[in-house]
Length: 512
Image: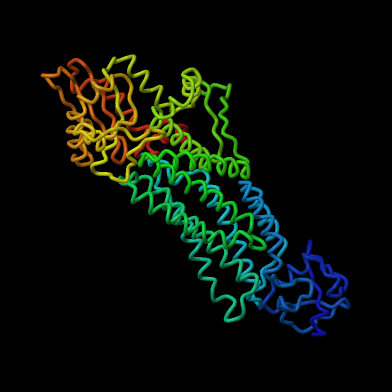
């Protein structure tokens, strides 16, 4: 060891031999240490200050006193800063923190914990890249001919697999700080995999069914429970809170959707209020503001372009919330209207942002002059739909006609007198049952012209067992473009597939 301490570096510059003065271990600089650490496992020829050559010596990283192996506790302050940057969606800052720290430390292969720490730092950089893509929502953008399939789910799965493979690095020792961090990062990637699977479920055909919504909320509840146990982690609190906020919001929004399709007024109202509060808290933490600005510079003759926030996941979630709020205003319109003055109610409805389904129906009525427009719940196939809507009180439904109104519950009506609508209800109920029997993929609009009554009927499923029916007091063609375009527009905007609406009219409208 005395011979090793006497070793010093020799550089050949311009064919001249430069001999560095003898230094003690405490006087070595970081470049000296890096040079010597690079010679691990190799024999290095050195020259004494006297100019005489000494025997070759084997230098290992453990012999260099100025380089201490990394331990898990060294990462804790760094990960606290890293988690804070991530929780504010400052992905470049988070990546810069990790890379700056790595630049000051040389991996020491002789230390198992040092090796694990460097592997964890590499995993953190991969997580930053994945999170940036996750918040850009590229995995939910409908694939176009020029787009490749998103690999984000595979990316998180690979990060998780790499973290799991680090299990044997430390050996069978007690759980260290580094090992604890490794396990917590596995939990983080598992939560992200679950969330991507939940979002991808929005694209399936049976997304609007209560069973599917219940299953998704169950998944979110289990992930939320896992994160609840981790939010008080010493160094990763901010990171886990970052994910937990999103999960709470999404679970509430799905619970709102479930309450809406069952026409549960009070549950819808409570969940919407809670979702709004949590949404604001989440947006505030990541620094998201739902503002759209238009650029003034024209590009190749095209008009001003709308600039969107890079946090498209937040934009999508905001649009989803507004969609549910619009549905609530439509479904419970007739129940809410008697609760305030006509002027105040009309002002509130007109002030609502897009999508405003009440105004869309009103505009359609002015253009086409139908006898009435109805939203009807088919309780024959869905007894879980509430028999009373909003503030409505139980009516006298003991007669045969009342029994039909129980099974086919009208909860929104534009135009038409009550008695006249009741006369039309038997015909409407038959068309609704025919529509519900149709297979998916076929023409969803059911048409009928009643010659005896001189009435034209159009029926279209909205979501679950809710239907819209438009009746004309004249003969209207089955393929009337005005009616079909309007019905399909409402179908796309309401509802069975929120992604369909949002991708066409919402935050995906810009060039990807």
